[in-house]
Amino acid sequence: MKFIKRFIPVLILVFFLNSYQKDFSQQFEKIDIFIDSILKVHNGVGLSIGIVYKDSLIYAKGYGFSNYDEKRKVTEKTLFAIGSCTKSFTATAVSILVQDGKLKFDKPLKEYLPDFNLYDDVSEKLATPIDILTHRIGLPRHDFMWYGSEYSREEIYKRLKYLKPNCSIRTKFQYQNHMYLVAGYLVEKISNTSWENFVSEKILKPLHMDNTNFSTEVMKKSDDYAYPYNFDGKKIVRMDFREFQAMGPAGTINSNVLDMSKWIMFILNKGKGTSILSSDYIENMTTPKMIVSEKSNYPERSFRTYGMGWFIEYYRGRYHIFHGGNVDGFSAQMGIFPEDSFGVVILSNSNNSSIPFIVEMYISELMLGLEPTPWSDRLKEIENISSKNLKKDDVEKKGTKPSHQLKDYAGVYEDKGYGKIRIDYKKNKLVLNFNEFTFNLKHLYYDVFKASSEGIEDMDLKVSFESDKNGIISKVLIPLEPSGDDIVFERITEDKFSSSDYLKNFEGKYMLEKDTLEISLSKDGYLRLILKGQKPMKIVPKEKNYFEFTDLKGFFVRFEEKSGKIINVDIIQPNGTFRFKKVM
Image (tube, rainbow, N blue to C red; front, side, top):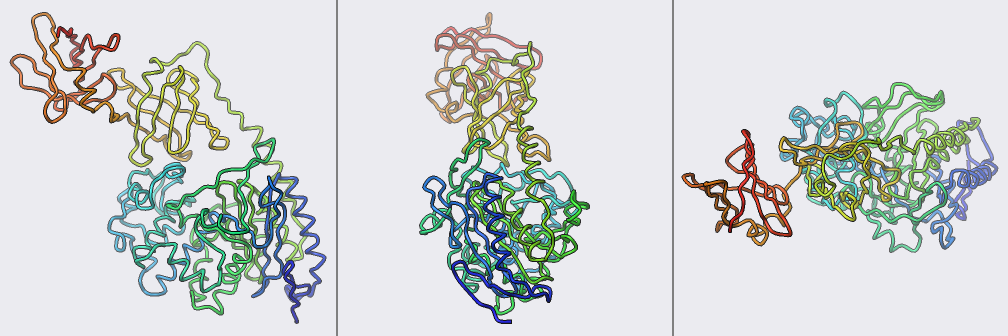
């Protein structure tokens, strides 16, 4: 069979598929028409596809716009973020180290990473490289721990011990990004180089994936890259590029379909013609390790499983390995039918879009000689239902009010895993700040508020506050992980309440009948209380005008302020509250 190559776009007009000769030029025309239609129906912006047959790229083309505002068109060279398609590269990097004898898939991670710590001691001791690559560690996603934060890769790694699991290790598939960060961190520690450098030297360069990179800043230096976009329900709007290098091993690769087609060929042909990884290890990555779902909602799809960096299923009776990718403003899909010797990659600059999956299925069914399944109609119906359900039933309950004045809720709260949040009181409203996001708090009922943010699509959260036994707001509970318990942020002392200038305001003499209480600032920078006949007692700030004793559990001090001056102090103890009046 002679292959005729043309590069505008790259295609081969005639090839064998399943021993049946077809003229695919007409099929390519169908693909073009279909994609143009799908972009309109699903409010897409731009798209690029690559189709691989055996060891050749037979079709590559761009559709729509890489820059919607300037109407700059997508080409087969346009760079896109590939999101979680990155995970297959990380799984390959780990496999290379196993092949080289530097790792073993089934040995505990603690043997390679002594500082690997999880909330659950059992999972921590048992976890192996294969566990973290197959999403069976027992942790839910906990994505808001890192999303929008400034944590480094190592900082996120060290915070893992504070993230609560919701099941035991190896009992349930839960798609997860943190463990792929751990896999990348493992690669770095074993190879003594960065994950980015290892993947570049061991995978990208040997495959001549010369335009693939790990940073949006690098991508933007290219002459041909896509901007991220979102359809907000009414119009297409440009999004900000998301730079999250700390989570690189889970999803920061940027590429084009020409480079990604080389990746598809590498997996499809099990490394043939390269010395990167032997066929046994590629077979291992694409062999089921964990059940994802026991039954599909659609008759065309079998139960899904997961290998390492790849989902696996039977689609209409054909062996199918695939993975999607989503980051802000970009969606991607790559799929391979190994027994039918072809694969497809679709890259788009539409946020959280079903278009890449729809296009992959359409192209694949054409390649298989099957009647196309109406995935577009099915998923459009789901999209319509979802958009109608965005209106939450979180309505304010009349006749209820917060237990405190709104200003009392303001302060800094912390969870050791997720970090700090700050709640500000501004213009008689509460504003919650977390990572780079700002949420407006609207009262619903009692101490429950609705947090809404324009910075996170369709994000409404019920935020609840709790008081301690002295009536002080002490905790904020936020459902940042839908499949687990609310994340509990506990009030902490703001730095400004520990400064000597602030603490000097409380110095002086206070009287209760004939008892005298003296409060002074020590040389060590803390307040001490002295009652006649008793030793000095140290108090530390909890919030504005509110302190606790360091050596007396359940004992607190609350100062009363009027016109900017301290007038009284309450000593709060289990058997009652005693008020001292300031006299000098």
